[in-house]
Image (cartoon, rainbow, N blue to C red; front, top):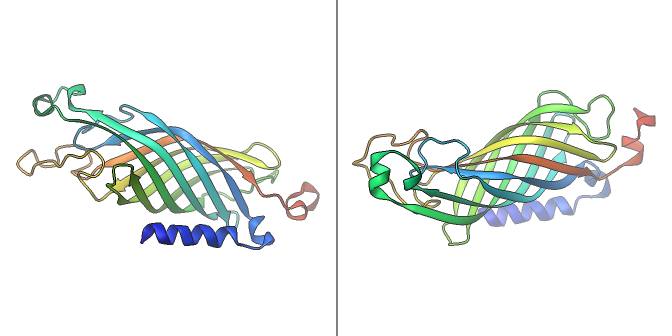
Length: 218
């Protein structure tokens, strides 16, 4: 159902009229991904892997946007990388590849607009809903949330830095391992459900409207 809704939303956006398209940015995200869960209880940026994919942003105004993304990445972990006696005894490990699809609401704390000489940078945050597709067939829903900084590179280009985490509602669909109830409560920092995080940069291109975006009309 979520894949169907996501597909309908993409078709709706790409069938906007020309005026609506001029409020849009297209681009890509590139960075790293890492996992936290039963096999990585506490290490941030443990075993990072490449994460990359396209993004689409529709800007309602200077502060409010909706963004779609589809990020390919892999995650991995190994109990033997940790000193915890339980993990050393257990000896589990996994490596898996995923496609992360999200739709988020993005809010700029100060007004921002690509190609604008004054509104040329902003700190932002976002929250939404995601669907994590595993190439092994173990798909699940996630809640993405992020914080970042964006800035203009020129008349049509912008870029930014972003740290974005995904809260899942599953204990075994990423790492393939379910933490037994008899082990320590809250065995790792974030509880039994798995998390994964992206850290990286994005570059976007604004579909340009000369009259709206040319500095002559500021």
